[in-house]
Length: 280
Image (cartoon, rainbow, N blue to C red; front, side):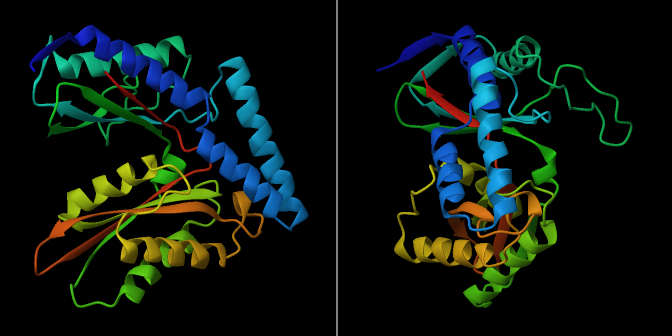
C-alpha cells in the first residue's frame, strides 16, 4: 500500500533522535557499564567507571551532553519502497540535525573544508546513508560520532587466503595502538566484506546492535566472543588506567565480497556510544 508522509515528520524525528543520543545514554550501554563496574577488580578502574556512570545520570537528568564532543551527525535511512516523502528528504534530515544542535546547545564541530577548516557553525552537513527496503515506513538510525574514537578507526584489505587469526590480530593491534584515546571501555564495530567503503560503513552500523546480542551466524558469533575476550586481556582498562574491562562488546556485520579480496574495517565507539533509532 502506497503511503505518503511530510518531510517535516522526518526533520522532527531526526532532531529528537540527536537530542536523545547526545543526552541519554543507551540503556544497554549503561547496563554494560554497571556490569563492568561490578566485575572490575582494580580500584582505579572502579573509580573511573563510577564517574562515567554518574556523568551519564547527570546528563540525562539535566538534558546536557554526555560528552563535550557531540560528534559528527551520521544518519542511516531505510526507506520503504512504497513510501512517498513529500518534500526534500536530504534537506529535512540536515534541518533536523541543525535544530538538534541549536536547541540542545551542542558543540558545533564540523568544518566546511578538511584543509581550510572553517567551522560551519551548524554541525552540518551530516552524513546520510540510504537503503531501499520493502514496506511503506522509514527507519531512522542516528549516531553522534565523536572523533576521539573515530580517529583510531582502521581498515585493511586482506588477501582472501589469510587465516582468521590474522584478522583477530589486526583488531587487537588496532585496540592496543588506540590505548586510552577512544575513552574505553569501548564498543567495537567491525565490518567484513563488500568493498572498502562498504566494510567501513558496516563497521559503524554494527554499533547499533544492542550489547549482549550476537551475530546470527554462529561462526561470526564465535569470532565476536573471541575478539572480546582477547581485547579485554589487553588490560587497557577504563580510560586507560588498566583494568579487566577494555571493551563492553564486539559487533560484527558481514557482506558478500569479491573472490580476490577480504576488506576488514574496525570502528571503535567510546563508552558513550551515542545512537538512537525510530521508525515512522
